[in-house]
Length: 348
View (cartoon, rainbow, N blue to C red):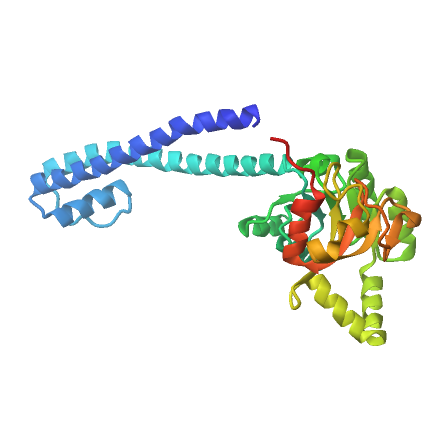
């Protein structure tokens, strides 16, 4: 926590006490005014309270009844003390609310800046909204970075981590914890901006997974050269999906069921084999995924090249630490596989 934030928190405590004490005094003073009018003028409690209220609030309504000389002198004294107290209370309440808002905002900024293993969404358009909803639905932590201040305010009000800023600036990416992030998805409408965001992000986090949007093949090539891990063209993806629906409708329907993991209760997932996990050093035959884990291993990813990606692996293929397995099975069994088979045993 920054020194400025700690100082603001310390300053807020006496400010809160001042507000409480001054509000309590004002309440007591209203009672003094009510009793004073009742005693001096012989009015009922409601009329006396009403007169005390319109005097303190300076509304300027007509007096309840004609005041005696004693009543007028009392009104001068009552108003002189009370109106000043009311102004003090109003000022302190306003200051407390402003300081509280600043502190809440600084806390939010501090928490976002120090997030770990999260995803950064640069640009919250139609695609950005869908990506954000899917990541949140999968239980991933994320933060949205966008220049639209009203949009960011709306996202924050809906409980979504979001910061107003320019993603092409180092300061903005640092404010959303770029150095501790797992991935960055840049969906800005301009390809040149996506290139620059990729350059800045890669410079700040060499290990970051960067997914970028591109409008055409030339832009895709430039963004890859800038350091993106993967570049997607929404237009191309949409065209390929539409062609798939027409040419292979049953395959498309089957893949939709699996990837959505809704109707069939199935999921296709990638799992990392950690160093020291029970599966490391075993062949697929020895691991016996169908019997013990009730899942199918579709591929073993050993590296970044095509030769390191073994699709439809054989029973004698070896599983090594650091490999990524693409598996198909029920959501429950995949969770059990990750917790019991892929992770290294915790030392006690």
